[in-house]
Length: 202
Image (cartoon, rainbow, N blue to C red; front, side, top):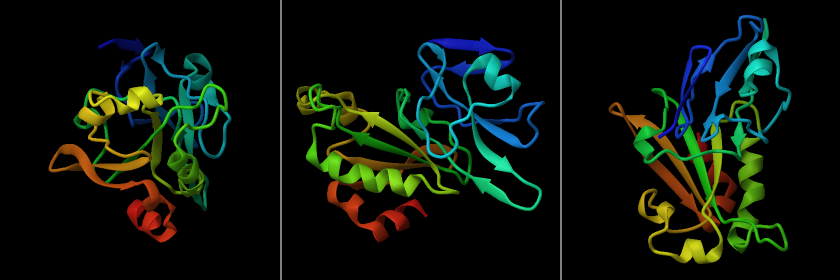
């Protein structure tokens, strides 16, 4: 496991560090630090504002503004992380008490069409992105399970370690009795049920 240090931030490159750190020069911004195998990650896509701001963001190129607090109104837009490295197990996800973190396991993209090779994934992704693109929604990571031959392999790590038997699979993780664990999932057509999806995220 590769570790990096940058100006006092200890970053485990296998784990999404859901730590909120405040820039000394951006008192109204809160940031999410997300690592990758190459060091501090440059997350390419997330819902809402795409601007990287503040001196810390400029110097490290890794901090995402996820919360803007105003004097009379708090507005929160959480990230949809499309560049995300899974830890070795769910127990290593860093999720604070009372928080929820979601992972959507989807198929890889067809090299020719550039679309998900799984038709169920193609059908579900609009519902997923819409549900997590609003204000005050929890964080979501998008994880591709590979091409069809990789997914069909019984030893696929997403099948063995993450107990993913169907795609798409939307998993919810929370801290329970001091340990992060899966607390629910929706798979395939269940994700298309708007009310069920809303209840699942609540």
